[in-house]
Length: 86
Image: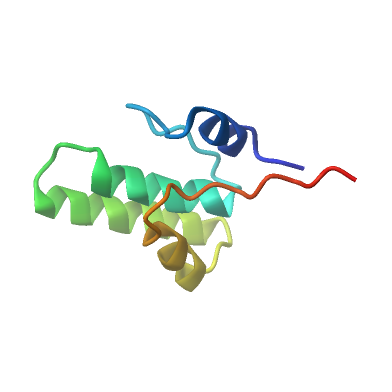
């Protein structure tokens, strides 16, 4: 099943001003960190703390830290690939 939040970002090209994420989705977890890093207008210390908090919450949902970090480093927004129609 495709993540509806990822489908929205895929359609609109960016998460906009608000990060809409589903905690069960690996791509949403990474995009939440990207959003904190790229969009939020807060101090560096606050960004670091919020990114760590988001990473921990994603790992609490069972997502692998290395995969979240890999996706969060992408230049493009992390979005679940579209399912190919059969």
